[in-house]
Image: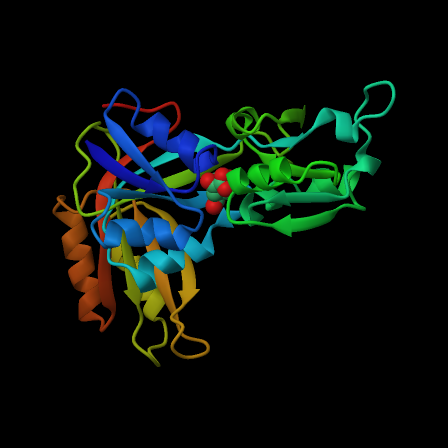
Length: 291
Ligand SMILES: O=C(O)C(=O)C[C@]1(C(=O)O)C=C[C@@H](O)C=C1
């Protein structure tokens, strides 16, 4: 039985996990905090952690990226994309008028995960500018808090499953500011993911440039460019050691088993850069591309 650590039941992570592991025997271990999701796999209690890493509207989830890099050493075993459908959730009787129509004025506070909230900022500005916004550790946690605080005019942004699990109602469906809102999830852990095959393989590396080397980044990129290796993302994050020093998180559309990629990495190391491979893994799009 595969054991999987993730954010609470009814979170987008929970929906996404069930999608990847559909039809397989999996046991889910839910945690309120992403730190405990990572630690559960790092200390061997679970085989994998499910980590939301990037969203169409909000971009990278930097807290999670930093945990992956600084706090744990868990290889990436798969990535997949899953739609983030967010809804405004509360109790109808609390926030509707005599004609049973939603009265935004009765909502005094909206709770959600910061990344989910950021996906709905225009909606909130337009309809709920007066409402306080409170960030909590997951969308599922936001819905649970609203359930436990009746009569206060609180609403959550979260999933349909979380609303149903907590006996609350969807006041408005699909409240994100853009359609086609997807989140990219990583499966991290020490066990290779062989349950599903994909025709797309990716590799993620972390590159630290040598100090005082003009043009170093350009030379790193040219090691990929002249080999015609396709990069899908490059992101800089602070090393946290000294102001102004960064490492580069690079996603590459190629397996580490290919001849080209190890040669490119060798060339980059020869420039004096440090390279850490974070994983080489199958990549699944939505709906899942099995190949
Ligand atoms: O709170 C949740 O439901 C989560 O799974 C977390 C998370 C995230 O951290 O990016 C995942 C996807 C959503 O788009 C918003 C929040």
